[in-house]
View 1 (cartoon, rainbow, N blue to C red):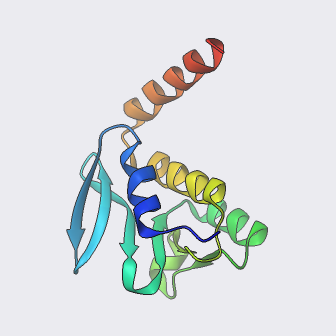
View 2 (cartoon, rainbow, N blue to C red; view 1 turned 45 degrees about the vertical axis):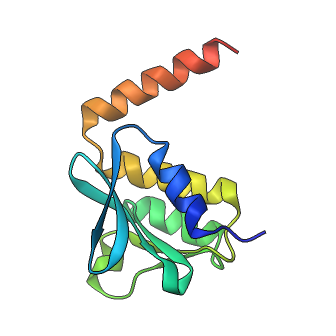
Length: 122
């Protein structure tokens, strides 16, 4: 089942301290004032900021779902995610990875500690 722009919005806004903004006419999601995802609703895709290494891993694992953005942006880790092709779990992983890539290190550490605490409570 394809993911929808509403899925991107809901998943992104579940992450700590994320706010929705906009640039160049597209909704974006920010943490610490930095963009980690931009939604292109007219093209059924979201562009996420990954490390180049993680981008390579995701593209290799899901070439139909993930593709580097053309040009210099892509070489810096910006990755296009095809909402029609991606499964929700892969979208969730991509958004979390993008969030971790741009979030302040202290916030990422607090989030990691919280995740461990929640898993310990299971």
